[in-house]
Length: 122
Image (cartoon, rainbow, N blue to C red; front, top):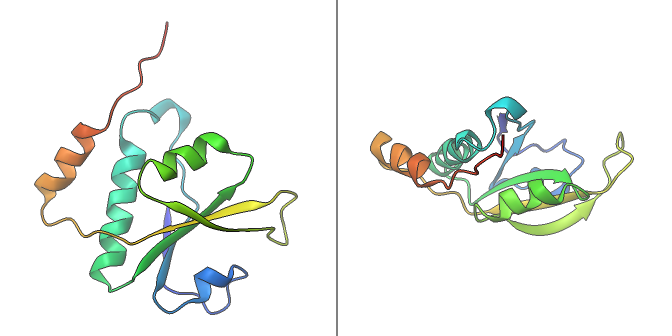
């Protein structure tokens, strides 16, 4: 995960807004997915953006990646636009949400433990 302050040079219009931070290059190794790590990373990104005064936290993901879009929507993001980045062969969904600052580390821990776990069949 990489967090960016507003980026006046970004090809995505939303990323250029002065009150928008962006989360990019977000991934959790498949062996570690469905353990709450992604949710915790997003909570950290929200806290990072909120404590720096950003009104929105934005990100993009491939439009065909319906599981990823569902993951982000389940964490409060909403689709605000679609675009095709110059180096891609697919359209991307642009998602955004107001960031929330967590007050204490205990809140982070509760949030992680509140994440539903997906059981995998052996």
